[in-house]
Image (cartoon, rainbow, N blue to C red; front, side):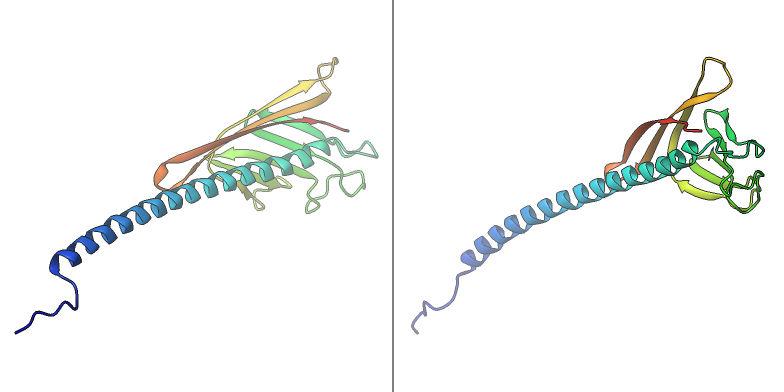
Length: 179
């Protein structure tokens, strides 16, 4: 019988499978690295966005601290501790603090969460930022030692970033009190 030269030998098939396996391993390795990088960068962006939005809301309320056009609502700002800020502003210009009008806002750290409490009644607690590992606030007073001029807020977030561990973001904001 004649041997046909059609087809592949066993050695050719083994060599082809070895080369394809090496290429496939390289592609999977690159994909896994890119996937880890994507997860880490997504976690960084999310943490950065969370910390910026949380501080932006605090800044907005702190800038309104002391808004009291009639001088009878008792508007102002209190720094109860470095992790607890309370802001009072007469938002409806009626000369009194009215429940439900968001005229009394408190920001405080509860475990690893930044909480916003409106009207200081305990029923409106809203988690502003998760994974907060540090929150420090400092108040600068006027020469009279009573009137607040500026608040410095420093917040740090440590968030999980997949199998690569955790990422940490810190943001510091100086807020000048307008009223």
